[in-house]
Image (cartoon, rainbow, N blue to C red; front, side):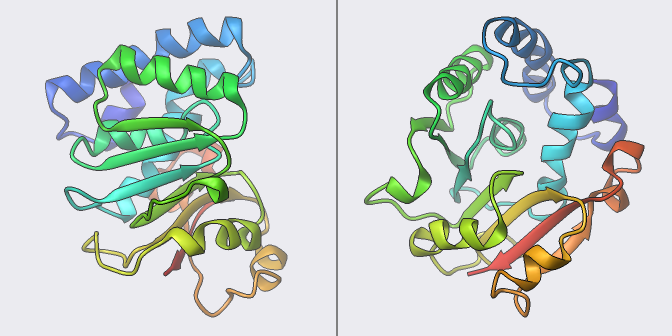
Length: 210
């Protein structure tokens, strides 16, 4: 938890308590369903929660914005972002039911009223549109854009970025970006420039505007 407070100092008492609860909750659930690798569970705050919050540093979602987390897994980046932005609506989607069960239980346990978790692929969601989509290490950029573009709406639900797709990725992304057909639109930031931790070297935030 200390590593979160190293970079953020303006949380409410409620937010701090919600972040504190995540460690025990994820350790407990990870014993039942291996949703976070065993070697990473002890680095939960750095490698999962702080990593997710790189998006919050770059994009301050407006009150009332609607954000979908594509392939949320155990709830990343969606759960940390929902704590960070309590007045933003988050829909967390994943095709694996047991992972969504964890998301639902964790969100309920920490009292998140702004999270809805759905079992299914984001491209199967009908009748909803979103201001932003977020994801972490889910699929190639071209696939993410194909899935989410039809349900993203144009607009400005952030002061920093127009509505669009924001994803966390690692490694050499040159080929992936070049083959996505989105090269002229893509912006990228180094997570290591945002949070100066060794584990974030070669980690990036990728953004594609609607």
